[in-house]
Image 1: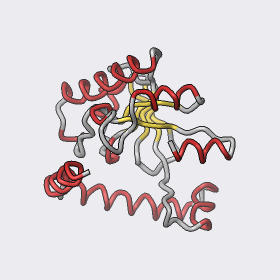
Image 2: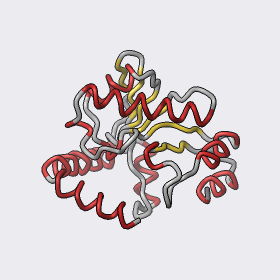
Image 3: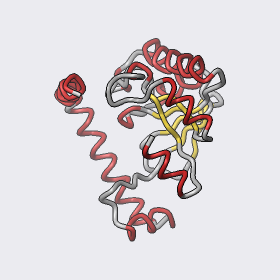
Length: 183
């Protein structure tokens, strides 16, 4: 809610992507807060039901359930349509997009560093260049301006990170589960 307040102070609205299995858990938004964000003009979308860290390893049926169950839960909370989602952990492959389309999503955000917008069965697949708190303003400006070398470097870094995530998916998932249990 603090982030929404900060965005609004700048006249902006954000995309809040919700992992629905965590709604109302300690440290996560409640149904009332989700409704409040939507009423304030922010976009509410899905970040899956359970946040599988290796969506690329899920079956097509599992993927469809992740998107459709999450979408349905959010639509119940909001009493309105939900058409936006974001892939957990950036674990995007084509079948993830196909399942999102089958579940009725219209926009699926990935962590793939690209300016191109793909499409699968009517669902637009939108990548992004990541800006974090450690990204310098100069690098952010170069990414926003489409500087070829800066964009290429981020793409190379992302693809290396993606390979590492796939190679170490099991240990990473176990550490994350323990962290969430403590939280």
